[in-house]
Image (cartoon, rainbow, N blue to C red; front, side):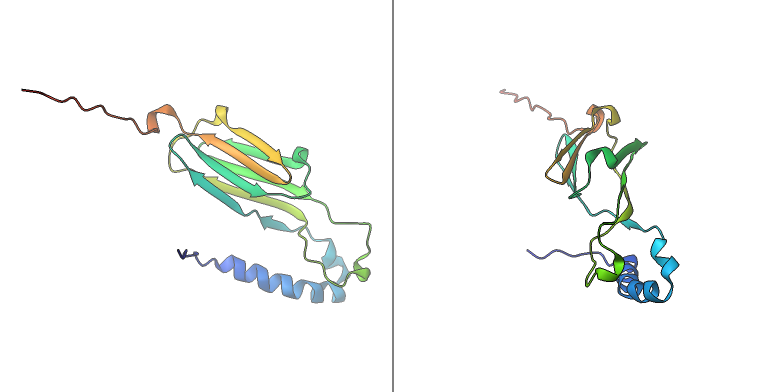
Length: 147
């Protein structure tokens, strides 16, 4: 089964910036000190009781991850530090991201922010965001008239 992926112009711009960034860094050394903010890729699955949100955050200490819920918007953010043990002139290829990251998603149905469960194992953050009871599907029993 094929999936359609929505075109995102900012992804193309980020790719262009990533390819040009080393050239700017060579000519303007102070540009290396800028702070980057990058989006966090998420998977969101909906079932009858909750939304399950997964984010890959390898190498990030769970204490450095902030998770907030305001109204119907969930935000996951944090910061990764650049590897300072290797000087920039020694790199031949540098693709690992560092800097601030943030991602917010809004849920179409009401959720229970007090019951959100966050698990972190082997670099995978899993958030279970339960729906409120009022929006969960209800099973309606059918009575049979035997006249």
